[in-house]
Length: 290
Image 1 (cartoon, rainbow, N blue to C red):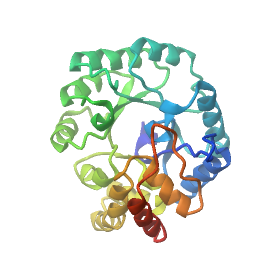
Image 2: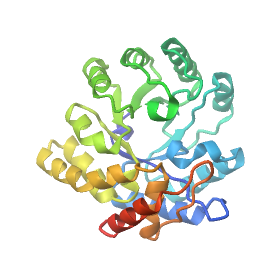
Image 3: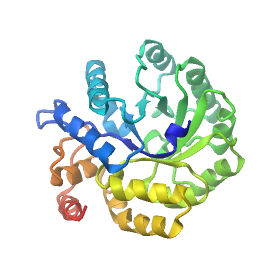
Image 4: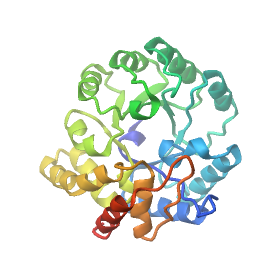
């Protein structure tokens, strides 16, 4: 899956103040990512507030992204959930045309044990018409997918990568050491992308890349090319923003930055709420330097 090497952007879903989807802004963001050097786009991930979009809104968002993209970048579809059978039904009904892979978050809230997570992902991998990317983000799900389970899933012919957002470097290093050669480890944490790539990760699915695609995707490209001094410089240049956008919830932070840049509004859907006033002022100041 060479299409997944480099920088993917986990696209936000822009909203108007009345909470309806701002498709014009979404189209602008896609164009900005393409011109900024991004390698692929992820639609309807957790950053896209997919949990608060209706089925018809999800279809409209996908149509907008595909129309704006015009086949220029590979697309990855976010499709996950905590009801395995309902998710399998979604896989059977989903139109996957125009997409290269599926990103599926591990089950949230239910807190399954490791055997439950293994069986959940195995069922998805068996059912999916596209290659599957695991997504381990315990800060959102309440459970972490162990290295042992991820490595076992890496043996499945339809599981091609993991997006690792656990922040657990011991776990990540164990996966990188023991994984099959063709299994990709993708950073799911912007601030840890540089050290993860130094250890052998293949890239990132990023949030901060919305705002600084040239610098951040440039850092990833420099890592892939072995230009470590340049990569370190760009990592340090983007690190403060990478951390700040997550301080008071995501995607409220990145939407504030993008609003200051004139790309979209700041609205997030409940139960999310916008960032606090102190952080907003700091993010707007940082955005002026982007």
